[in-house]
Image (cartoon, rainbow, N blue to C red):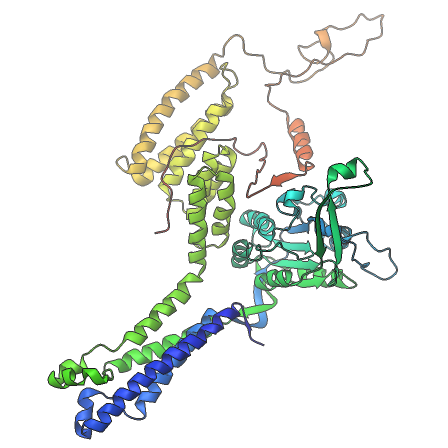
Length: 628
């Protein structure tokens, strides 16, 4: 069965048919005028149409226009579609809006206790889904209402994930209690940028959206569709729904008998948007109920094997009518040289007075030119390159206004569309540097250089980032400068790469050469300080405690007299500026993995980096990269 992604485009057929019939009527009247007043042997001088060729050509033009309209409607058929493999991380996206506290739910299987509300049903569904997935698979956890919150980045710690799901509650701030699929999908786009292909998402929601927000998720959805990230949708609640009341939380906390009402509303399960997300991305749709867990688990596991694989979905067929149009257009162009345009009645005297060759060369490709313009519009405006350009431009505009965190999701959408991803990656690095998020900026510059190793401006700007990063890490007392030295040496290599690619006289290479000369002088100063540190610098920590006879282990460092039993010794606190041992770093990493609740609000996403990555770096004003 044929399905149209943009069915409203089919209404364009009506004005096109009206225009075509009107144009046909004008041509037919002109031909009848010639036929009535010109002898048969002179008619080829005015027109090569006859009673049979004129209707054929008009039908050809009408058919070509209808084919373009059909292509604009994006037809698709059921069949195998490429989706991302199932070996990557799975992002669980929970709807945490106020409507998820509605109690119109039923148990997942017969004989078990019914859940309290929709959110409890979603938690129960997720726990059973994870029970059937491989234990080593990474799981991420996101909740959303009017804003989105990343509770867990992808992790293979399954007990931690189950604990976070159990602790998940609806968002309690009334101003953002509605649902925003766009914010939720932006979080998935962010994960997809680092981990696709292989990433999948499961959206557990009642499907309700505030009025006016129905299309607010189109851009991130298109980015996920382009990157091959399937979004499986699970609808919770009943189609009939129930009425709910939101009371003032202060009255509820005070246990007042009369509480102020903030809002009254009727909530019900709405499947339309959830089905659309699943259909567009090649995911599956299910209603939380008996058998739904097994069905969804099978859909997630069916594409195992790594890379991209075929799975049940829909195949885009819009290229077929577009190809048919191009064939008709070429055929019409080949015949146009042998067929002068039909003359209208008021032009007859001018055409007869002119020489026959001049009349034959008169214009006549207007309708074909119009159709070609429409074809280029249809082919270009719905291409990934066009949407990537729009997302990149929005990011640049927000970044120029100083709204760096709001610009980030737009750059990430542009990257996810995989159309010239080097440009939005570079611009996102530039934006994160302006926001003084040095670690993220350095990572993004490295990613841009992986995509285009000869991008001289990325070499230069990453060198600036590394220099400022080292400046931020430098101890003002002049102690422990090894980290600064390492970062500045890495910056020197970046500046050298920019000079090599752009030359000493290039706009980028000239600035890199100047920066390199300044940095060399500063590095020499740092090397001198490292070789001869100031006297007030703390001594490095001891290698171990031993039996108390050395400088570090036991307090005082003295051995107790033999006749007395040794008293418990209290170790001295370690120097705060001392480098961490391997065991201490491992403990910190384990603790950081258990910290939940990173905030994704209004396009913001703050990513904490591990100690093994480069520290935070800095910013120099480069020119933004535009598409054309």
